[in-house]
View 1 (cartoon, rainbow, N blue to C red):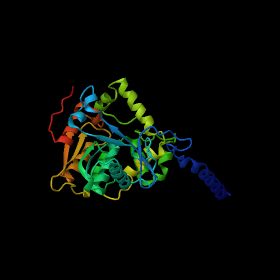
View 2 (cartoon, rainbow, N blue to C red):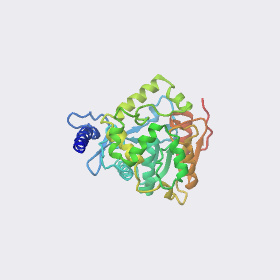
View 3 (cartoon, rainbow, N blue to C red):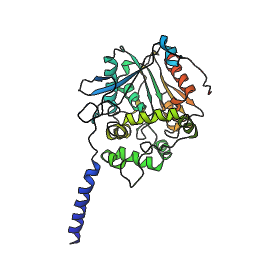
View 4 (cartoon, rainbow, N blue to C red):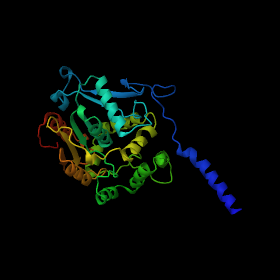
Amino acid sequence: MLGKVLVVLLVAGLAWAFPTLQPPPPKVCGSPGGPLVTGPRIKLRDGRHLAYEEHGVPKETAKYKETLEELGAYVVSFDRPGYGESDPDPERTIQTTALDMEELADQLGLGPKFYVMGFSMGGQSVWGCLKYIPNRLAGVALVAPVVNYWWPGFPANLSTEGYNLQLPQDQWALRVAHYAPWLVYWWNTQKWFPCNSVIAEKPKMSPPDLQVASRSAEHASKIRKLKEYAVKQGVYESLHRDMMVGFGKWDFDPMDLKSPFPNGEGSVHMWHGVEDWVVPVILQRYVAQRLPWIQYHEVPNVGHLLIHDRAVKEVIWKTFLAGEKEQIVHS
C-alpha cells in the first residue's frame, strides 16, 4: 500500500512539475500578437531575422565631436537571437552567433574584413568569431568578457577560486545552466530559491560600478528602457538562452586558440577592471598568460561597467581602432 501511495505521489508531482519546467513560447516580433518591429533587420539564410542598429551621425550635423566621429568610425550593433527584435534561435550556439555576425557584415557590405567588439556576455560571440571566422577579422576587442568556469584550459584550483567568488545564488544558477539546462527556465522563475542575481537585477556590484550605475537619472532611465527592449520577446530565448550557451559545454576551448593575426596585420585586445566583482580578474589574467597574442589592459579603480566609464571608453576605442596609447584620466 505504501509503495502504491509513493507512486501516486510521484506521478502527481511530475504532473504538477512538468508544466512549470516548460518555458512559454517566445512572443516573436512581427508575428500575430507579438511585439512590433520598430528598427532595421536583415533576413538570414535560415529565414530568421537579425535586428541591428547603426551608430553615429554625419560629422557636419553633429553638435559636438565624440570619439567615434573623431576616428571616422562606423559602428553597427545587433541583437543576439531572442533579444530585442532578432528572431529567437532555439539551436543557438557560440558558432551560430558568429556566423550570424558574418552574414550581417556581408549583407551590410562591410567588406572582407571587419572589427568586432564584445562586452560582458557579448564576449562569447567574440570568442566564437576568433574560432570560426578568424579570416574575416580586422581587429578584436574583448571588454570584461564573461568566462565559462568549465573551460578545460582553466586549472581546476583557479576556476574553483573564481567560481567561489560568485554569490551563492549565482553559483547554483550556473551549475543548473551547465549541468541541467532543461531546468534553467524553472530555476530562474521559481520562488523557492534565489535565481541568478543579474536576471534578478541585483548583481554583485563593486563601489566603482555602483558609482557608474547611479551617475544620473537619465542614465538609469536609459538602462531601464534597454532592459525592457532586450526581453520584449520573453526571458527564455534571451537571458536564459544566453546562460545555457555561455555556461554550457563549448565545442572548443579558447585556451587552444591561435592568433588570427600571425603576421601582425591586426591585433586582439582585452580590457578588464580590477574591481570587477561580476567576472573575477584572476581568470582574465590567466587567459592573458595562456594567450600572449592578446594585448591585455588591466584598469585599476573600475569594475565590470568599465565600458560605461567615459574616460575608459574613449581610451578603449582609440587604442582598439587607431593604436593610440593614452592614459585614462577620470573627470
